[in-house]
Amino acid sequence: MQQAMMEFWDGLPVIMQIMTKIMMIVGPLLLVVAYTTFAERKVIGYMQVRVGPNRVGPRGWLQPIADSLKLLLKEVIIPTNSDKYLFLIAPVLAIAPALAVWAVIPFDDGMVLADINAGLLYLLALSSVGVYGIIIAGWASNSRYALLGGMRSAAQIVSYEIAMGFALVGVVMAAGSLNLGEIVMAQQGSVYHWFLLPLFPLFLVYLISGVAETNRAPFDVAEGESEIVAGFHVEYSGMAFAIFFLAEYANMILISALTALLFLGGWLSPFEGILPESVFALPVIGWLLGSGIHWLLIKTAFFLFCFLWFRATFPRYRYDHIMRLGWKVLIPVTILWLFVLGVAVALGIGPWFA
Amino acid sequence: MSFEQFLFYFFSVVLVGAAVAMITVRNPVHAALFLVLAFFTSAAHWIMLEAEFLGILLVLVYVGAVMVLFLFVVMMLDINVARVREGFVRLLPVGLVVAVGMMVVMAMVVGARVFQVESPGRADGDYSNTKAIGELLYTEYVYPFEIAAVILLVAIIAAITLTLRRRPDSLYMDPAEQIKVQRKDRVRLIKMEAEKK
Picture 1 (cartoon, rainbow over the protein chains, first blue to last red):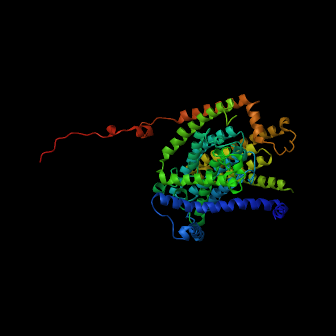
Picture 2 (spheres, chains in turn green, red; picture 1 turned 180 degrees about the horizontal axis):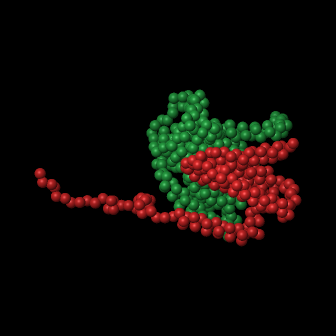
Picture 3 (cartoon, rainbow over the protein chains, first blue to last red; picture 1 turned 30 degrees about the vertical axis):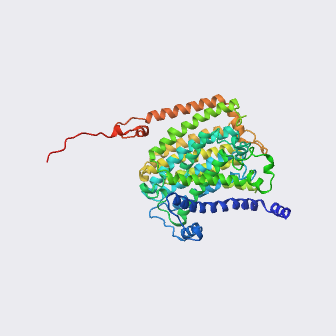
């Protein structure tokens, strides 16, 4: 059976193989996005002592389906005097990079669509392109609120990209590679080998700038309901609005997955090197405790939960405070830690740099 | 035509088209976006030349940062198109002279012997362009590289000092001061006699 399936797979044209792989990444991703919106409403609901959505389907489980159907059937309104083409291209420019980055994310050892050697650079480059969707949407809408939202977002993303890039430089220095798979494998050994310990300040900087890059609370001044209504997507309706939503949540999941990959050893099991080898040889328990894609999913889910947690906990930052935090706090911290790292790598301090 | 050739011609057509559109469209925002498209397609060309590091860096630096700031400025401007086009005929001769001069210089550079090198063959699978550039930059060209970095730093500092000015009339807050504040700094209790009826 397995033999026959392998033969069938190898017999497929290359383009079909690639398409199948893409579908296997994008399909579950969109499903996770849909249920992240549900989880967000539920989690924030419980944190605020409410129940959250509970009407559609058993315990509200069909809510995201109902939401997406509603958005699909709504009319896309194009404002008068808006730049029609740019107005419609903007959502595409937001979602395309958000999906394209997933090409280089490894889910397990060798389980990656494009195993390119400059994977981390590709990731940084594409995530910086995502801002175009937002600024073009802001400008093309012919609305003051939208323009203000777009401007805020542009300045914010460009500022936090520097801190984020520096944090990634630290990871690259520690792992000695730009390939994401190799970065994970460099953390092999045990929990103590994960980059979380030696790169702890960079981990914090990365997480904070990740939240800022995705325009999530408490850094969501680009949307800032109380100040500029809904920011850059105030004029969007129906599916065009839904696509911005999709892009934002896909980016959130990406940042969570990346934090897990870069600092928490990705698919590596936390029990590795702690439990004796014989445990991993057990039939089901061994698989559960051993390294595998499920550990990556668990870690990603944890950081995704943190995103929702932050939103329920922190009040929105003021715009100038965001800039101050980015330029005067996060960037100096990363530069300092890069010096420390440089010394540690030069001296070969174990177990990470030995 | 192989798939690679198809890609090359496809990206070339888009690149040239975007470059022409960039200088002919009237709307400055559209022009900036066409420039972004031109950068993107030239990055694709670089990647096809197996220089993936340069290609990705072009997207990261120019598309991801420089052009975003550029758009930021352009969107803020209220450019009067009619006034910009006013001097078109009057300035045409000057423009032509500059254009011809630049073309001559470019032809001299492209035609020079130094640039006529054999095209290198295909690199093998595990060749890493990033690694090759890094090794060269940090060994052979380490001093020019460091000097360029220092010059850039000086330029940044100069630009900041040129634009930095203290404005006594603008109000700003110091978050550290705000956090340190205590009750006795803010609240003053005054003992007063009760007013007579």
